[in-house]
Amino acid sequence: MNSRPTILFILSLMFAAPPVAAYEAITGPTGVLFYDKNGAYDGYTLFSPMGGKTVYLIDMEGYVVHSWKTEYTPGSYAVLLENGNLLRGGILEGGPVPFGGAGGIVQEIDWEGRVVWEYRLMGEDAVQHHTFERMPNGNTLILAWERRSVDAFLEKGRDPRTIPVAGPGPNGKITADFWVDFVREVNPAGETVWEWHVWDHVGPGPFKFDINYVIPDTMAGAAGSYDWTHFNSVQYLPETDQLLLNSRNFSEFYLIDRKTGRMVYRWGNPSVYGQGGAPGWLDNGDQKVFGNHNATYLGKNRFLLFDNGSERAEGNRSAVVEVNAVTGEIEWEYTAPVSNSFYTARQGAAQRLPNGNTLVTSSNHGHLFEVTRDKKVVWEYVSPVVGADGMRCFLGSEGPVFNMLHRAYRYGKDHAGLKGRDLGARTPLVKDCPEFFKLYRTDTPPPAQEPPPKP
Image (cartoon, rainbow, N blue to C red; front, side):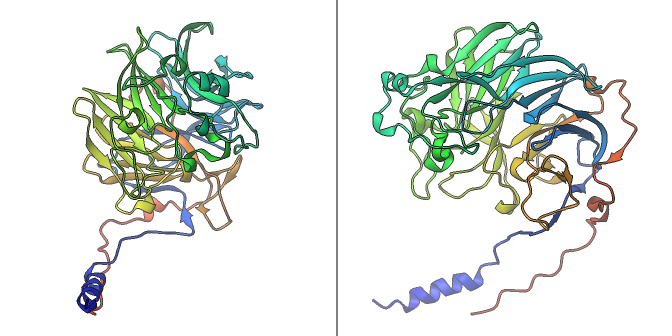
């Protein structure tokens, strides 16, 4: 067979195709990188650097208008309540699990930094992790793990060939037990008034959790497969009296009927209950999202979800998706024009703002940005807070950095929690750093592109 025509055809495609877009930087600036005053939702952004104990509220130009000093590093974020207090998770020392996300305490902190309420859940057999939510009735939802033995899993029908090999997690701890998610509702007195456990809903079929679903090895690590479902967000929906839960490991979100405890809806990965094709070699199968976080309800049967895109068969890349729960279709999706400009393998969040824009947290790089419905970036920020106390104008020039943010939230100037607060004192988060957004010009035409060379 004469291969010359085939070779010429391939070469012609290589030279005729436009160059692939890419963006990489060894050293990059921090603070507000871009600010479109006409397109962005005006307000204040709240974030908790993962390495430190201070919570910051910044304005649109990155100036600190208020901050809270706290006792614990975040586990994993903070929200601003309508009374102006923070509701915040914290990390207690001595957690029993070997994988990330364990906190152990949720606190309400007033504007002046005083703890006015707290709830602790940490012991040898249970620990609070990741998330929490204040309900309309004043109670608080707490997400937690509970210990379940290998024997208990085998009794439920787990294939003994898929029991994980015990090994150390990121914190050096070793486990030989599974940790299974549950949700607890506590009242202001700290009393448990309602609970829901994954363990009570194990079984086959579309509305149960299959005891034999095994997550990819690359997602788990040495001990991580014992973190079976790995929920990371909880939201109460008063309109329907349901809970919205999100599983990173199963790559799904769920609606749980609060009265019956039954799962009434799930979306994201039908292969976990045998009603869709599992991913294969360079093929996503019927799985829609990969390692997702921060499911939130938008109303009218729409849900917003941060799709990490990790362990994605067709290539890692992060996205924010809006899902129609009636049709099961993705109605809106944001991915960066260049995949390596927006990717976080773990954590991450998205908040739909009142003007229809979406605030995105790309956690691993401390990267926040706001996009419009037509996918135009109108505000962009990189956290300068490194480790516990460090502040940097640029990242990368002094070696590896840890400026991770789990979630950030934008609050409008009319938010009830900000009413009557003095936000006039604007302090730079880092002194003497260039304000990059003031240097950026949108009226400068891009340089002309050289045509590709001819073969």
